[in-house]
Image (tube, rainbow, N blue to C red):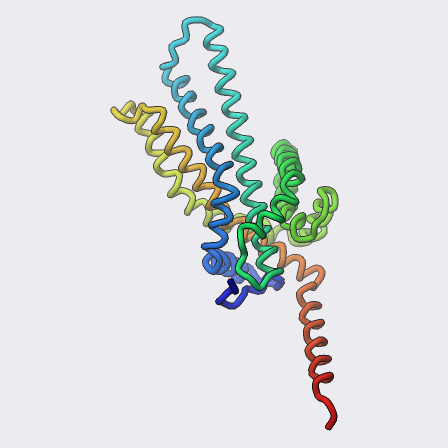
Length: 296
């Protein structure tokens, strides 16, 4: 099925406001096919992240309120290990969820730019499948480095902003991990503060929207702390945390699309690929016009 609306030009320099407007315009114009792809490929991971988050919260409440009936030290030690294991598994699936939504969103943008047809989940999956393994180990590695680097005079923050376009570079330019990181440094050089500011504003907007999804889980947690009758169910805590986690991962689509537009803006600013493509198209049109003129 052909796209009925005029396609958005991704390869274009945009100022701050234009990138913000383009982000929400792109999501609105492609909501159904984009949501379909995210639903298929991200929901299973987000669901696992939510379930383990709920289980961790439930056990944490048991520990805080002293409701865990431990008869021996060994039983208490086992509980602590299970809680720690839950936390690690929750972190893993949460990080995997954000990696998957990154892969889906950026693959969607690549297919959208390269095809005149409406983007299908199958076309998105081809890009996701080709980059999944590399993206997972690179994403986890970069996440760990940025986290510990944050305590080294903010180096992690600097690296996090630089590598914010990492997945977009890897998928669009089909580069390896090292080449993608080098490309990130090249693109963000002299644009760090502009990129940082843009990400902060988008993050605030995303956070305000994401707060709605976290509200039920937060309310249940507060009511449970005050021991309100009917809120002591672990199932209720798991369900609300699962919904909150899935919603948070889905809402992160906003920042992913915004980073995609920031990437294309930086590429145009540094390399002018879109401008050169326009020049080539003009040359081809002029050549075709000349060839079709015939004899006078």
